[in-house]
Length: 224
Image (cartoon, rainbow, N blue to C red; front, side):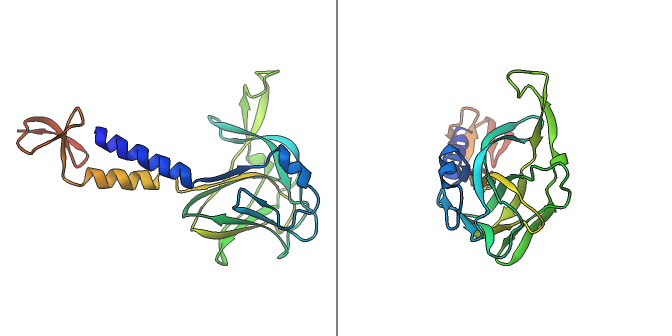
């Protein structure tokens, strides 16, 4: 067991190194105006030939009723997109992409986000403010106040370029995360568990002649 946990820890460290994450922040505000060609964290590139994009301070929570992340800045798309106004993401490896996005308008019920990769549509759904859940305790000045928490758009992507467009109206983007989740951990664990080795409950490797409770191929059993 001890050996298995060690391998899982190594895999988790590797995942952290490969994860891509960026939340818009205070220093980005200086770039407001024409953001065409602006890059963030070496994997986000803005196409803003119309000069409509801007970055400003705006608080919002994303997550669910149990776990929330507070964002303090956003990228405003500034209107409808066209083939010339997009967000490009350079995904390092296959996995899950999270897009922290909302419309900022309670009355907007038709603004859809489209995510494509290699000309294949991966996501095309309306983003609505009404999808938020209300959570108490997020406002330090009023613990009983209910605060809106918005869900992230989540989609599976391959390594390579991903393009985001918003054809029916403006969107507010707070950040992006890309990574392969727990897939690599599961793979390492399975490889270790199926190598036929036998371990005692202390995590020490023992032979087939060992008598007592052992762990073999990830299963606890009594070896006689």
